[in-house]
Image (cartoon, rainbow, N blue to C red; front, top):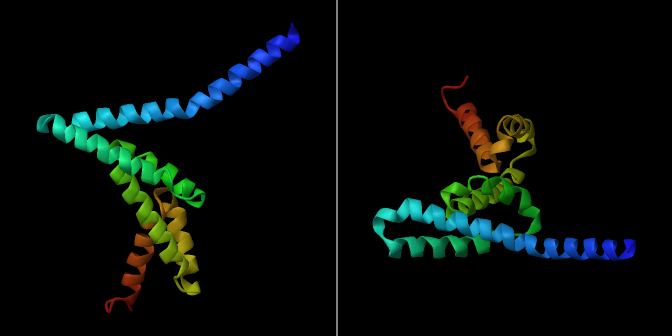
Length: 144
């Protein structure tokens, strides 16, 4: 009997684990439809349908980004109420900013660290903006 219960529990766990991605996907699908309905209701069903299809396609693209960008994708998905185009833009900007920051001269490492400690939680694009702003100030003719 105990062996039977263990097998049953194991089967239930496997079945639940297999269904989990579909549940998450269904929740995301509901969010897409609801968000598109709220933001496009005044424009009618054609605009709602277009919004849903665009968001679904963009979500599929974002979810295929390489594993190395998972943290960026996860952070940007927290802003998902803006739609998947916003999420994709957020991810793309941070990936580009990370690459650019890696190319900065080594003497800027301290500045990058300061900006990262202040703004790192908001993503690489904001860190890069901070660094660029400080560099601009340092290079301005009004700076002694």
